[in-house]
Length: 124
Image (cartoon, rainbow, N blue to C red; front, side):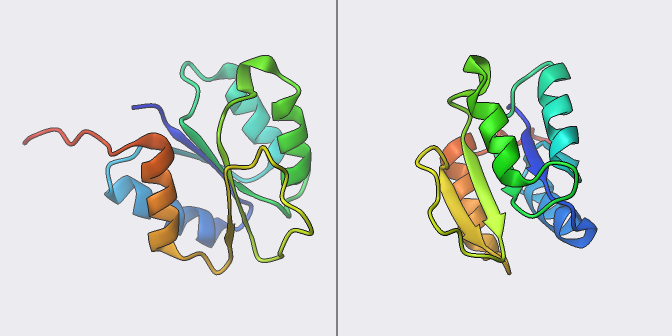
């Protein structure tokens, strides 16, 4: 299964979301800013099935990351779920969903399952 790219500058939120998703069987790659997210996407062997993206971050904010993603044909269709404490004035049409912080983990997990499917659990 392709990984999920989690882009969140708050260490506690990033760790909690990554732990939740890993406990559900997903492969998660977490980074703390938009520049690292774009670098990961350029060097990754497999494109992620989903990007979970904070808006307010240092270096490159979430809107700048979305603009750069959508400027590349290879990444144009990659689903992005925005996570933010601030309500967007208008969410771009090319954002799959908006999750308000504090994050409703059941809602987030439902979105992950929608865009990534259920992970295959290996028998012991």
